[in-house]
Length: 445
Ligand code: NDP
Ligand code: 2IT
Image 1 (cartoon, rainbow, N blue to C red):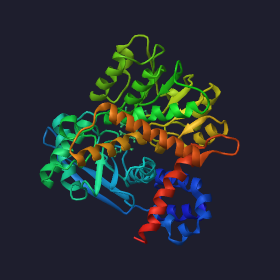
Image 2: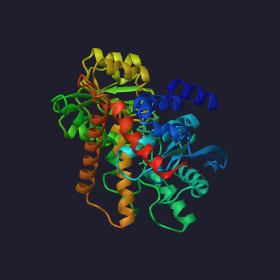
Image 3: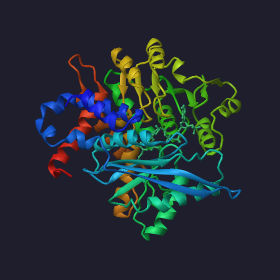
């Protein structure tokens, strides 16, 4: 395999899908050496088969707003790879959603899900629907219209969607209700369900908790902990919320949160009632994080800037893709940051990653560090199959063990001769090998 050649072909076949190209290139560059050392992969066309989704389904979603006006959004489901288990991955509702973004997310999900050690394939879906400013009834009607198409594609052993940006327990509820009615069964397809109807304890916190468990393992490799560390976090959604809780529990101080319009700096630290307030912010129909600075006097809102200019020991990007740029990485390096651990999917640009790695900063990609969310979705599926619910401690322990094992796999496959752990290579190689070997076992399909 020659990475540049594969990429030229891919870009020709799918022009303009920048995020998808970015995600594929990163994986190919990491695995090039092991791939070429195993000629059986090339003989079975593994790369050509793994970089294209099994299928992409695009459908229209017509729905009526509260004034009776008809709107049409696009709905998508990308079923990328199911060699190690049913397609599994979230649904994103955000106006920026397009084919490129969902293909990058679906592609990353293959390797992330492989790393969890659970039998989960990779997929992703969503819509360019914007939940901001919509009434509860509008959200419900949209979710029902979306499921009217999606239900034909999914099933507990076929494809199991979950949440992502703009899709939380409320949306999963409306989606699940419609699925259950159409499919006439209650086997739990969709994860992130409410606790009274098949959901798992810890699932809401899992991505953020898992990210901090992963960072804890990274810090331990250099004899460090979260205790008394200054932590910058971006986003103020589900992942940020879970991460902030766990950082505080481990003795760190979170000094930023962010939205698309800027960030909040809170020198006293986000904790206690301020974490609860994050839930209110998320539930409100405002698309801004600014109200936090009105609510808590000592904090300040910094418009149109990224939180990465604030001096910190640890940075946890938990908002969205390509939100930590080269200049942000430079700020982090110059300010003495020791660890960047991704709660979001692909938040650091390739240039930012290069700079962090050149400076030997501990850096973990989302496909390893945020795998706790989908792993706990897998645990929700197990509980649904067994028709029982595990206690909080049991789910949390399994999540912790999974994150520790993913960290160990990254160290095993990513340690460089000078001892620096290249977590990008480690995660990509460990995730890829399992999927590629399963593809060999199952023939050309
Ligand atoms: P949420 O919708 O709960 O929150 C997303 C947050 O990011 C919102 O606060 C959103 O604000 C903010 N945001 C969006 N764009 C920007 C931007 N350009 N700059 C700063 N903030 C921004 O989503 P999640 O917390 O679930 O998802 C966050 C990230 O984590 C995504 O990359 C997602 O793919 C990833 N992830 C999620 C998992 C999950 O289980 N939920 C699992 C693994 C990864 P606003 O709404 O105003 O746009
Ligand atoms: O990016 C992700 O891993 C998720 N949004 C969670 C997917 C899931 O199926 O729980």
